[in-house]
Length: 284
Image (tube, rainbow, N blue to C red; front, side, top):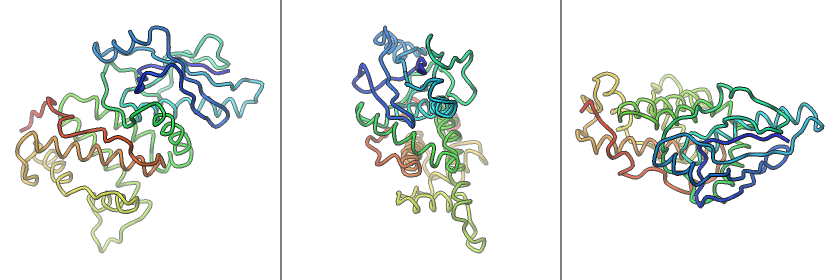
């Protein structure tokens, strides 16, 4: 069997066990001893802590291919759980009797970070299970095309920020990556003057998503060219106006990732108008 210790995984309802159907067998997540104390440390002390053990039946007897696929699936499990829960979910070490032993977590995994996280995009353990199983499939099928490893990592980095400016530059870099994917998927004729905004709008149209207003582009341009969230292009001048644009971008990214990776409908809107209250906006 393969087993590893999971860091920072907090699920709605705090289930004792959750079973995730993988490519070559079920992953069983079991709450670690001291789960309640670990949860408190994460949420109130902004610490990183082990919360679950994940076990899979793959062994050397199943063959190198099955074992290798199951080891690879550990990464997509962590990325999918990170995206679903809004916490930096990763592995710390393998368990004592695991068929595969890691002395150090590879660079592809999310880093452990002392951070309370943001709201999950699921409401309960059943929605978590459904989303994570869909993520495992979507990551295998569409992950390379959609640059999923980059999008999830950079999305996480944008949220563990120090300021609204930091968050917005990172969030719109996610949009820029999506626009570049769209540029390769469905090129816009040069005579139509393709632009960042047009490619983000084209991505929205391809998946039947609402199109973001020009505010997201104008605020990004002001931040880059004028050094402020609101300069010559974006009309909103208050911090609340700028936070509202950032919230719209973050919620749109959720819509896009759900559509592009085949995760189904967004079950919970992660950000509301007050989600970014208190985040410093030093350039206004």
